[in-house]
Length: 337
Image 1: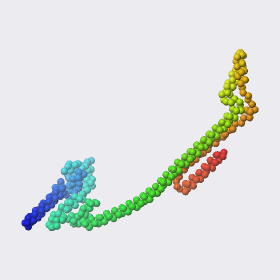
Image 2 (image 1 turned 180 degrees about the vertical axis):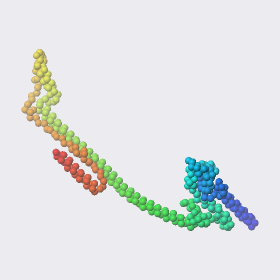
Image 3 (image 1 turned 45 degrees about the vertical axis):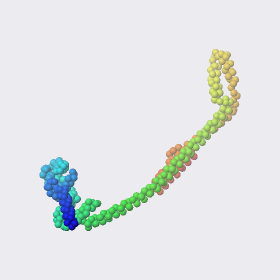
Image 4 (image 1 turned 90 degrees about the vertical axis):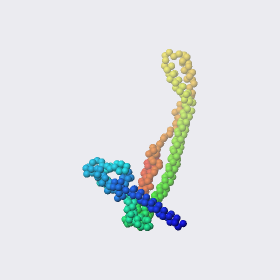
């Protein structure tokens, strides 16, 4: 039994060592520069996402382009995918080559792993992104930097402090916004009341104008009827058709009598028609009095603002009130005139 246990333990250790070795070989392949075929130093990524040493890219660009001669376009092609990167000058190329911090720290881990390979605990050290000390590192999920435990705690405290400051700023701004929103809601309610009041007042005004219009028309109709009755009752002709008949009879009779050869029949017919003239009291007709009405329309009402909306300011309100009083006085004078 002891022999089997020892054999099993030895097999697991060999399997673990082989797996660990495979991982290291895989990382070595990933972190190998495709230009110098060594582990990358200051790794930079091209737009195609393939990474190379920064110095290798610059040297590669110098060897494949005559950078000393000014040209419109210089370019390099990615050794892997042949992606073409255009650049105007070497300085511009250097400015766009940004070192990838994650790849750089992975390279440092592999470099230091050889130094720490004799450690029995199997841990690996690398340089901290902040203090550059060789210690066990943890990746910050906020900025994805590899930090030592001390720098990570300081970094988290800074993030916590900055978050609290931002929350306080947000709280202050939201309270201010809510206060203004509450103020705006109150004003909106007042505006809704004003709209309702304007509609009610407008309906009252329209109703009053229509009522005055109907009263004025009824008064005109009454006086017209009175004058008609006074005229037709006093002149003895009863109606307009009868009066029109005798008016036409007058013209026809004058024409017939002015003729030299009037016939006896026409003369007798004219005589008979003239006998039907009603009795008319000339004195009564002369004494007829008709009632006359006068009309006054306030034209200033059209120019006067019936509804006013003004800013809630004391000086503006005082000015509007004084203008209103002046307009009312002018309107009163106009009505009196």
